[in-house]
View 1: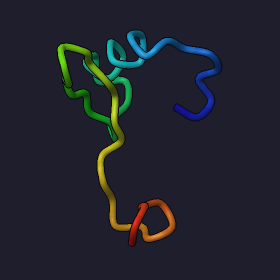
View 2: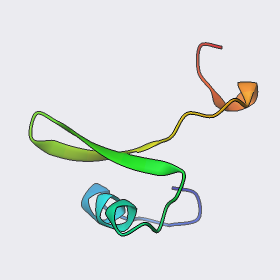
View 3: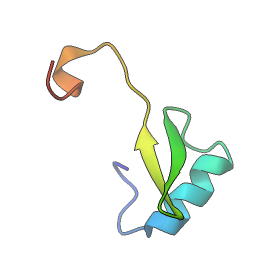
View 4: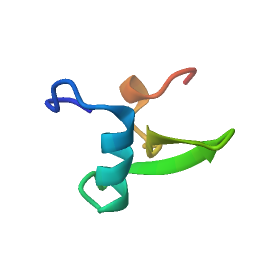
Amino acid sequence: MTGEGNVSSAQIVKEVKQGQHLDTHSYKRNSVEYARNNPNNDKPDNIND
């Protein structure tokens, strides 16, 4: 997350769940939770477009 400094993944996931990052969601893979930005329609922001 831009401007957050050094923050653990667990802290970011917690903040996402609290609604502090509106353009981000959390997901679980192999029992580990991650934060991921929501997709948007801005070509410069998206990979493989």
